[in-house]
Length: 630
View 1 (cartoon, rainbow, N blue to C red):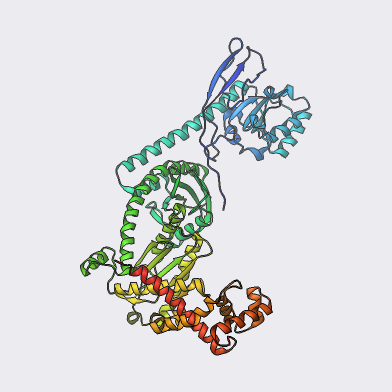
View 2 (view 1 turned 180 degrees about the horizontal axis):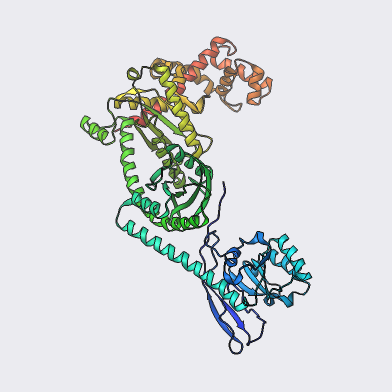
């Protein structure tokens, strides 16, 4: 992927020149030279302030190069060596005498065409060319060029070819006045052309924006002006608007997703390092090789998305790329204003949607009429089948603005990740979790059984995990409940998803876990809720917790011993304890329990009690959350 850096904003500057008397060839600069525009010699020495229009742009197509100068009649056929540097940018012209006896900053001759008299070169031409190339000069102009090639110029030609510095032998008419005036005129004309084009483009976009046609109208105008397909993306990579010229076929959906993926890999979405709105040129392999002009949409320094121009092919002419970069940099401000307006509307809609999701998850509706009205607004099928997913990560911190913004973007992306194009997907940020409600096909309509439904839900959960992991980090976990029918089924699936998510913190599970994976806990659900089950768990575990002292947690030691299948040495290594210490702790646990913990029966009782206690604790927490006191 190639990248051409954009040209920066150009500060105004002035140059003070000491103009000598007529006939003199000595110029003594009294300030750092940025650009020279000569108007001829007249009278005695005087100081003149010459305004500088600004450096030529760093963008190909917006600059004056040595090749551009060679196309002029005055300098036609003047190039004799250093042709490989003909694309070097020329911004100004200085006399070679200005360098005599000074140790100027290397940037003082950057992009300058250095004008020297042939008689002054003597035998130092090759050395001068080497030094000028090191100091980033654009060309060496020799006046007047001899009709024959002298020995010193033969060496100079070799040095120019080796350094890639154009060497021009000028005609008698191409004196310093004529040459520097030509360069200054072309640079100023080019800068004026860029300014006029930018002003014209901004006026057209401003007129479109003032009509209130929105983002689609802006993209249509930019596409019409540029002849390229224009895409606008939000901060999470969502396509906000697009338009392509009528005489061209737009990108396929697959190609758009490929653009999003490659821009994401380049760091342009969520946590992008880009902090300015300068346009950049990138090359991508889509349906064919395409050049893209990409600019960040910023409002008050805040990143709101990307404005992308997709060229018809590659390579695109430098002139077109330069114009489209100007268009992109003019368009980002208006695009940002429209995205900001849309974001305000979207945030209001999301708050209302979040309220609806909260009500669904907790089955809190005033009456059936309210449920029906809100369901109709969000196209929620009351007789549909739904499953609930929970995305959890330490990276979701509601009290941190940046973290919350990333989590909201993940929730938006999750809504767009529905199982099918027509399937409903609702999402909401609830504390340190992102909850996703997705509609799934009914079992009787799809002809598939519970196993196939669970497999489809797991596949969707893995998609959510990959998507969230790209934005929140590697420690993302996804849990989901089983599918249920109707609005009441959403709350039931949410409870199961919360149970699976909470159990995932206590027992070893995969990063994408289903309530179905917790079949044992599901079987114990009724026991955990019954007084008899809770009494059994308390009777077994309380002696272990009460026996804890300075020697450590006996319950943790016993559970580790059970998980290691009663292997004493393995448990000691796991807990970093000496084998004799392990024996001592197991003996204490046996006395506290009143049974030998090394027997299978005792281990099963402790294991069962611990699972019942864990499930009971989770149920209590969910009851407090889902049914708070009124």
